[in-house]
Structure formats: structure tokens, C-alpha cells
Image 1: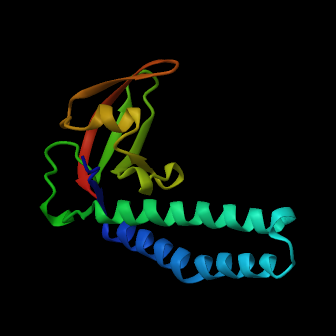
Image 2: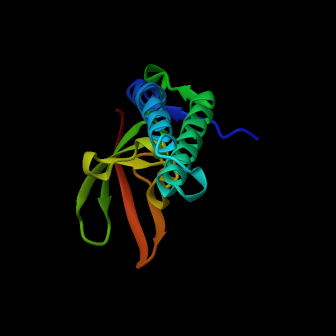
Length: 158
């Protein structure tokens, strides 16, 4: 089963840039490190060679995972988003029912999440709890220290 993930144009661009950097810059650098270590002599006792080979293996794994992510990535047409309920890329204005605090979050794919920028993952407990809710509804979300009650005040597109 494929794991389809939805991305904004910016998020997809960042993924592609990271993959290109790994392929075009890091991969040749890893190959050069192996060649340099190989030139230092006996490979059976060459820790530098072993480390370079291991680093290359990690790099290739990272490249493969990014390629798979990109193969399963889908671009979200933000103009088609329904603002009657909380979906991926919805910007949601919330009020914590316990303390009255108001906050605004945008729900994004896991790889685009950045709490400092107000972007939370749709796979996070809060993200999951908000999905499908409408303005005026209260989402009750179980968190480690109890249950959060968040009222949906407003839903807009990001």
C-alpha cells in the first residue's frame, strides 16, 4: 500500500530541492570520501574507509526514502479546498475552552509541520482531532496531561 501525502507547492519544492542536493552534492562527496580512504592503504584495517562506506549507505537510504515520498506526493489545489470543515491546509482559529486562550494553526503534511510557524501535522493528536470539524464545534483531544477542548472559531484557506 502506498502512503499518499498531500503537499503545498512550497512543501513539494523543498522536498525536490533536498533530493537534488543529496544527489548532486552529497552523493559525489560521499564517493570522494570513499576514494580518499581507499587510497590510504589496506582496506581490512581502514576505519576511515568503513566509516565512509557506512555514511554512503545512510545517504543512499535517505535518497531512496525521499524518492519514495516524492513518488507518493500529491499537490493540493488550494483553490478547491472546502472551508466549511477542517481539512489539510485549513487555517483554523481556535479557542481553548479551559483557559480562553486563542490560537491559529494551519494543518499540513507531517514533513511540512513547523510549530513555530503555526503549522501542525494532520497526523498529530491535535491535527487528527480537528479534521472534519466545523465552525462552532468543539474538538476534544486527548493529550498526555488530560483532554484539550478546542472550539473552532474560524476556518480559512492557508
